[in-house]
Length: 402
Image (cartoon, rainbow, N blue to C red):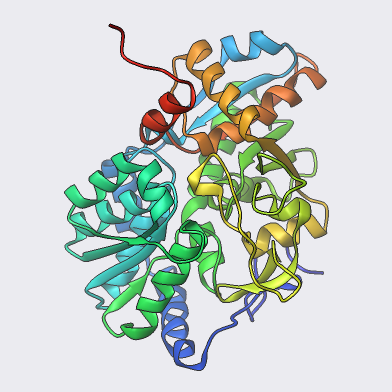
């Protein structure tokens, strides 16, 4: 029986995962796998990582009972795992510090990555700065425009930001661009993939670094409520924040899990959503076998989400496996649902959340009234919304008072 929690020796979760690489990249990725396998068993490496999480990131992040949001809908209590309170404003710093430490251990001088919403780019630039490494971030031109505050942050932190205009000029194209640079210069460069995607060992490695989210939440909810939650909810693009939360509860059948992906503007029109788990099929993307949105020739289709961090045509292979075996339910939230959830959380709890996280909020408020008042839902509030303010103000037609 395939494990819910771990890949097999070839990096597969069920039928998904593995390494599907051009020959010249096989050795560099194998080098990363060997280095990580060694580092994760080294107490000094893990102690340095834990110290940075505590003293630099500010972990543990709080688990907050959203009383006014709960009262708005009735039913189950809604708790928020406050990853938005981490240094840099999202869960991304958890794995970026881990990958940067590994890169330094391997003797690499430069970190290379893609980013959508910019949170991975900001977190990696931050990790590069504190560890004395160079950093280059590839970002789709559409997202550069939508997420300009994060572009400025990356540049202030010393990173080089490359605006990608190829294809749809969004996250998938940024990944393609970064892979191209890595293929040409991997001797001194560490490719720090920003989610639980890509060739083995990245899906497992990023999940391991993100598992701190679920481990903390499991302990915190038992201290607060004396039991495990009834449900977990997290948004899913590539799926790192969801996998981080879910990982600690996979073997607890009493805990339902919901991954929420973007139905965007319309599920009926190709290019107007990013609902990989809902409408995707098995294919090969960015070095992994997974579920993806693709055309009849197996090429990734255009995608859309109001949240730049979710406009990706694939998903992490562990998520694809968890869908296949029925352990996690994957549902959708539209752009309109997401924008409404954003405004709701601002108004009820005084929290300005990332648009990515608002997909999870949108489903949580649908779910809560279906459960009893004794029910407990934990939502991963994966990031804060500073980066989205200008874009949302434009969408809502907001302007400064005269």
